[in-house]
Length: 117
Image 1: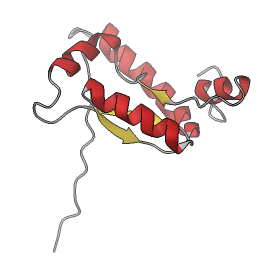
Image 2: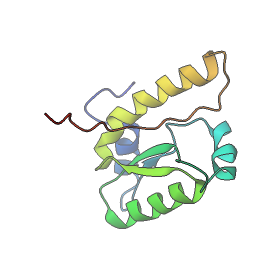
Image 3: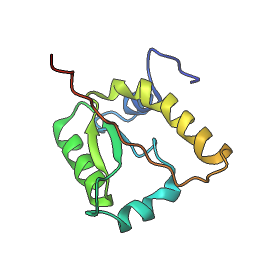
Image 4: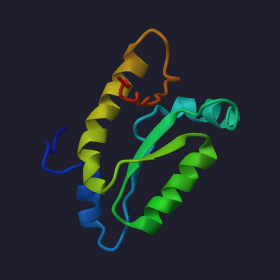
């Protein structure tokens, strides 16, 4: 939120570390949920976890790590999408740490098909 809507923390870090591939991932879920998701992997529908980066190899590695933990990897596209995930992370933190239900919080996107006539 300090940087604004024209860049992100992930993009700023990538610009400072030339040649590095900075993948934005895991910031949209509280760390307290990671063990629970891992324990339940391959049982039922996994929660989603978004990630972004422009380098295909770096994205492939990140997606594999996300799936290994037990999430469904949701590719948002280039690292510039972190401009949207970083504020979303603040929303998740607000719900997790200021809410009454505790920090073990995940999310799942559900796509509805268009009704047929």
